[in-house]
Length: 613
Image 1 (cartoon, rainbow, N blue to C red):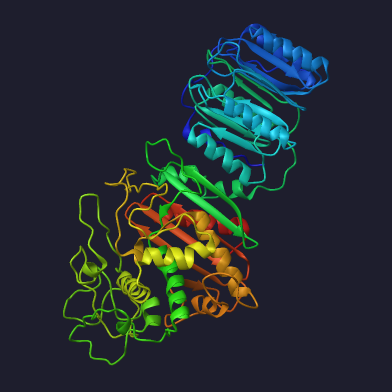
Image 2 (image 1 turned 90 degrees about the vertical axis):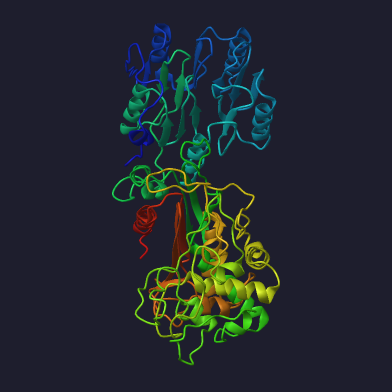
């Protein structure tokens, strides 16, 4: 089995190699390793390993305890009351799952067993969580305390976990590991900082001693599960296994992570200087798994999670298209209508546009309405022969006044005025400006802002609770980064051209949309949601532009591999999402970096692992 190893990329920062001996104790059939621990602890670890070590811990003052699954135990320098309780529980036939000591030291400890818990001096919230797990019929298999102390802790049950005040990246990894059908089994924190998380046949670590990490890999390479991990206050460490890693189903999450650009997702993030990524995958029209990688901001403490909102950039257009079809459906407006009467504003027209063809709503959605965007409008007196690129918006930084939508349309912002530049229907030109007109139409016809309209008519019905077209939403937001990996000024540019570039969302919400569109497209009738089946079919059917639906790019039309997709590129952000209606599948990737290659490689990895086109 190929195993991902986080520190192989990140380096084992922190303590470095442990001092003292590193001696394997292969007593009987269960292996154990240690380094830099007291000689007596080393000896007892090897002596007790054949009986299957269930609990292994060090106190903040250098004491230690080892307990086996058949009730044997040995301890040195732990609180008397804790030692007495271990003896009582063992005599009573209880299986001790873990012993842990808060970093404040003194008479503070916790012992969890197959039937309950005994504790003294641990945080009240931690004890409450432990009790809640037992009340729900779940054994607590591990408790861990970060070195910072206070109300910081991790409680792991037989089926779940709860953490408070731990390093956000540690929590990120705990969550990621459970997405692949594994369960967290151990968490441990070195005194000098760092962490390790074990989940049956997998583990992640940051800042633990190099020698410890190497021996964890040795165990895993031999097919052993890492059952016990403990760190001494002086920089020592100890590992123990009491059996082989279980035979578990293939972990598609790990497969994707290890198939990005011929390497791992972390290595490609580093190569592309992208601090944070979020990813979610849909199978069976449900979110199968979701993961986060790296940080919300370079140098920051907050980790990227699937719940984190990123700028979706031009995915904004695809989501806006859902709102536009909702508007047409409820207002009785036809796709073939000329958009101009619905704007409450006169669309300028170049003198050389003499055709009677009109910029229909359908043509605007397909980038064929003759409304070209920024970067494609020179020379000013021409009406044909433009480059197919352009059409985007640069956004507005922290020290710039953001214009109104009408000012943008009139060319009073940082882009030229919006005008009819070429004959409607004659040419394809990717056009953010066209979606500004759609935004204006929605606002004029609904009497609300696009942000308000989409929130009520699209996001609320679909449960997309972390999606907004507001300039500055109130939920947690990722920061954008330059190609060199530096935080962009102001962390995020602002986009009054919301329909084209201003959506904030997370991968969970995008996959909720994918699931809905897939189900609505294949349903025999209308489903609950913003669009009728007919409207969804229109959205995902080819319109005026070959290879496009309405606001979405299509592939595999007429086959079971039909897909719709859109990518995005804002200053400091890249994005991509794809849905497969007939396969009941899809995915979304959001990144806070400036290189589109990363999201493309992640998308390719997902497709490869799942066999999607």
